[in-house]
Image (cartoon, rainbow, N blue to C red; front, top):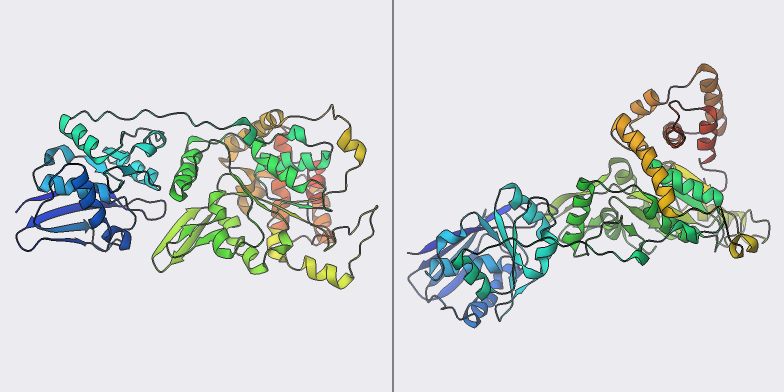
Length: 496
């Protein structure tokens, strides 16, 4: 009896395993069965495919229809299997030449009238198909974005009837990629920051070395304003970094962007929202911030157990999300920028406003953040309330994000040329070898670390920051002034 087979791909995190769609028409009572571990959305494709074929003026094969999605042990979900199932039925019933489906892959959900609806998570499939040197037929709404993948051959289809006509005529011409339009107003500029010279300096250091940053200050000191400017001074993304971020954005249905992401979850977010999870082991905020900034405002208001889930991703740059229906590893190489008040009322240490909090309340507030998490943050900055003159008077010395980004890019290039990664990613052994100190400087640094009771992790992070400061100054060796400034960014009694 007639059979047909063609290729498509399932979704498994950011991977796209190959799936062979096999269609068999046999004698017997008319029926339509889908096997191969399909989820409910795939089982429901029977009605969508039938209506789409009839409304596209094709004949419905009056046979016992069996559709096998191989391999059988791989879970299949989503509506992307509608189009390959429909084409397999047409090929098996002789309404479409089976030879025209060779070395091509198809993805798309069908509407009842035969239109092909846009989907998400298709970029990973097109990437794998490109590696296999196959042409891909995708929904027309997704084609321009998917064509951005290097070397891809993507054909956009509006509906089932027009796609079949194109397949029969052998006129499958790849869709051209279109530029991503990003409005300029989406990129906040450092020119908006008045004063705050110490904070601007800390932002530049964080951008140059990829360091995490914690800002402690009273309400209205500009912590959120400063954090939102960090993505604009980060170096330009490499092609591989950009591709990874596009895969993540496409997987969750976000628009593709060239700029680095800035994620700002509310403090009521759960651990699943931050690191990922759910029934399908979906990515969380730390993955959506990959290559960019994760900003946690009002840090002590986050539940402590939620914050502690960040400790492992901060070290490894990836997170494994394991659930009953899947186990996926997602990239999570982000810069953490956190902001908090020094106490519940926010005015501890202020020279202008008296703090109303009791010592016990201050202690409980600061203990909401674990010491190991604070120790993983390289730069701790204390902000003061700005004077009216700093805000209202023009700052002729203020620099734009573009100017600062040039200096940051030069410092980052020195790091990549020397060790192949940013200073924040250096191992403990690499830090010690790249930060060789002369005898007098080493003795001074040892005494300072012992007196301030800096942990072993803190010592390595001080050296990483000092190495970044040396790179910003184009100095081959780490000097005592760089070490002194790096120590100044370690936790103080107020925020430790």
